[in-house]
Length: 120
Image 1 (spheres, helix red, strand yellow):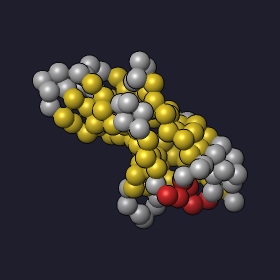
Image 2: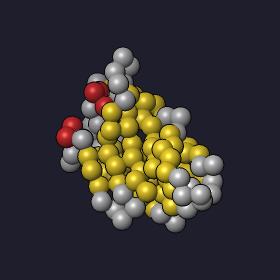
Image 3: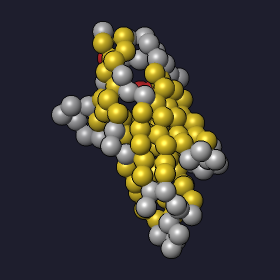
Image 4: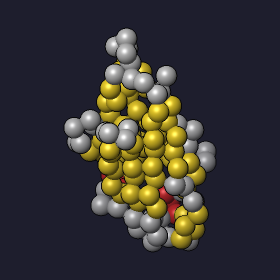
């Protein structure tokens, strides 16, 4: 079974930066796409950014040019560098991974989330 644990959430002033990390643990055949989602109070959970196993990235429009997603396959870790933070970036950020298990099933795994609060 694969588990994801996020870290790095904090309270930061507008214009500041944070780096989120998400470490995967457990035994799996491979970790395919990894991503970050966020959910603000009263809103749905939306994709922020994703990165494939070969490093292809995808971003939602509102974070392009400010956020950078990256991964270290050897460490089974995905990162989200967030710069020029805005109050509207305030949300719980969730890590997500599509994995292929040892029996070749494809599963989607979620972390428990880390809170990012941006003050104006």
